[in-house]
Image (cartoon, rainbow, N blue to C red; front, side, top):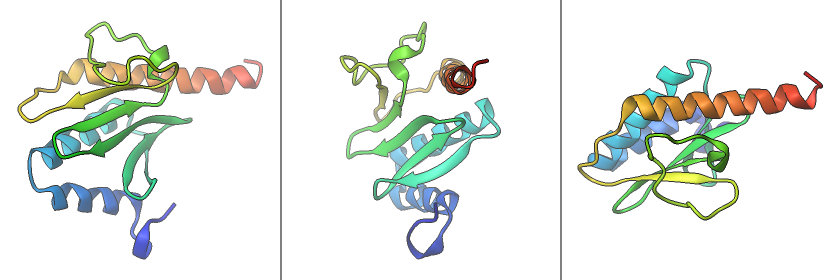
Length: 133
């Protein structure tokens, strides 16, 4: 699970946030904190050559950074209720849904944490369902 040079995923995510040094780093840091607030037992991972991943009983979401957006992709987003309408990207897929944050966007913290809670609930219900709950 360690990344390059033996750094932990948390250290690699810290380094990415610092390396960005702009609104994208601030947004990624905010998202990370919200994920941890919503699910204190979250596991941080570093996959696919530099993508932060947050998991609990399965993948919750990823945090990719691009020139003009921070994309937070929920692995099973198509199965999650999104009453606040946060999902604004990858809407036509059968599984994933994403939120593209752009410079100046304000994160609806309560709605975002609700999505994280729903993703964890889905992961844990899928896990117990396989064991014959």
